[in-house]
Image 1 (cartoon, rainbow, N blue to C red):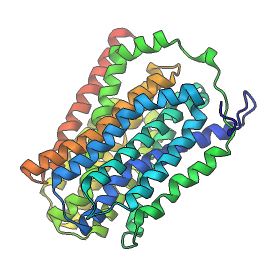
Image 2 (spheres, one colour; image 1 turned 45 degrees about the horizontal axis):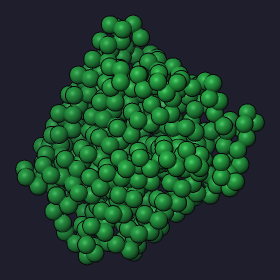
Image 3 (cartoon, rainbow, N blue to C red; image 1 turned 90 degrees about the vertical axis):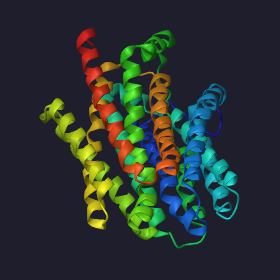
Image 4 (cartoon, rainbow, N blue to C red; image 1 turned 180 degrees about the vertical axis):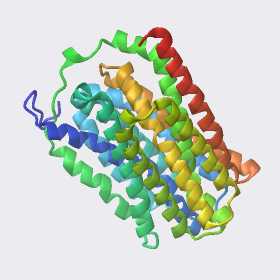
Length: 394
């Protein structure tokens, strides 16, 4: 373990692990930043939808590469080092992007976006190790809390970019956020997770190959894809389809994240009192109806109604999945969970990349229709998960 980090076996205070859970705020912030900053880049130099798709593809490739880099760094330096390293790398990436705005070549921004994906993937790897003590006490609660922090980070990205939109070098100011996490993680006591409570790697690998784990990964892949298709493209959709200003478009993006965050928080507290099957059906129908509203609206009121309806529909799906994961995998293996969620986040970035290429071919109206199709897939996969649970008795 690197000497620069304080580690305490059994004696580390529980709040330090919750501070690690709060790292999902930085994860959400970094992922949400691209969708929020695109209007600023386009205002400086208009670019095609294919270029936007390439930006999101670069972010996804960064996540994929992190799957190779993070385990090697972890074996050599430990996951506490990864927390600081990922935060520092995110600072460097944002500062690099701040000196690479249009009219600089697009490949320079793609490089910076790739580094953000790499930093976020490494960060997530460390976070899934850091939350082990919390997960062992409360699986569903830990996953839901991480999701709420993640949503707060996404909302913070939209609000910060919107508030500083006309400030030169926005990303220089934004780099303060990961810098704050560098300071927090560099001086935070880190507990050492007891290996006795971990399953063997053979068991974890077997579970990852199991039907249930694959279905969970696919479900989160499509659900994150649905959420990020809207989040990544909503500002550009509002600008190009409705003719609104960039600041108005970013404000609507913040409204979307707020709807998701509030709806998800309400859903977590309401789950024990609601029939899950009915809640799922209502959520899917609401999300699809919201996509239809967004597809046909030509005014700001309709856009707000569509965004709120989509947010309300998407909000309860993640808590439903988190509860199922907590029951399906009562033990905790960081590699297994990081694999599932990294796959899901990769879907979250590949989906808006696909939207970019589709929009270049069929127009930006496709932004509202692809998430509707993805929501149908989520519904089918949840039904398959419940069926698999019934058949296996797990």
